[in-house]
Each structure stands twice: as C-alpha cells, then as structure tokens.
Length: 164
Image (tube, rainbow, N blue to C red; front, side):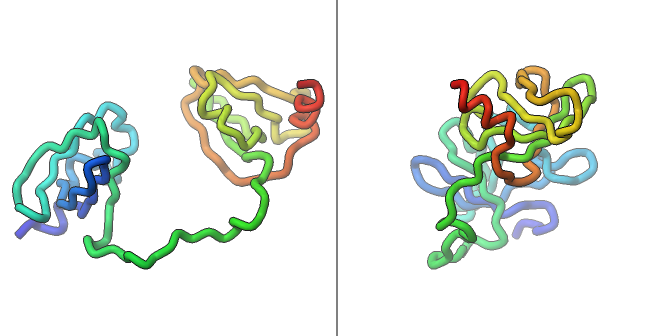
C-alpha cells in the first residue's frame, strides 16, 4: 500500500481514455512543498497505476490534463457550476500585468481570444486620471498576468472599436 502522505491521486485524461493512479508528490512540489506551476518542460508524469499497480512514466504529449482528485470514484451525475450562463459575456477583463522590469499595472482588456493568441494586447489603464489612456503590452516583456475580475467596456477601448 502506498503512503497517502507521499502521493497525489491523479487521473491522466488523454485521447485514449483515462489512467487513474498515484503520482509522487515530490515530482510536483516546489522547495516549499507547494504544488509547482512553473514546470513548463515536463514531458511525462511518473505514476503507479490504480488498475495494475505498475509504475510507469506516462508521456504528456497527447494528454488533455492531469486532474488531481480527492477520490477515484468521482461523481457521474455532477454538473459543472454555472452561475451566469443565461447572461451575455462581460466585455472586459480587469487584469494585473507585471513587466520584466518589476513594474505592475492594472487595466482592462477586451474579453476576446486576442490577448491569448497574439504577441501583445491593448489595455486601458485602471487609473483613468493618469496621462495614459491606452497601453499596448507586448507579451514578451511580461513576467506575470492575472485576471482580477470582469468589467464593462471602458471609453478608451470603445473608441478603438469605433475607429476599427
């Protein structure tokens, strides 16, 4: 029997189905013991399969996601929480960006895929009394990006739509 203090229960979901098993916490933990989100070069996950007890490295190349679960039974009848499905999408995301020089700015960006797909995005500063009314942010200069909330469209982002 595996020591539950040393392993996470995981379900590796891929195109070939799901693999349930136990992954050593050490392969996911940072030096302070928290779950690591910085490991961008991970190519596989080492796990002990629930069905056979065999330990193997599962390549992550075609994996949709690794789910960390409380138990393996799950809830078949459970539906995702959706509080506002009947409402239209909010026009803007309120974000905080941190540049590679340490400066942090909050602002609003259009709630579209463009900020994910493009090499940069336009942001209306949250400080409406300042000199800047719009900022182009090249993603190559970012060290951090957080979504803080949802907001209606600002005047400066609406002006861009009018001139498009």
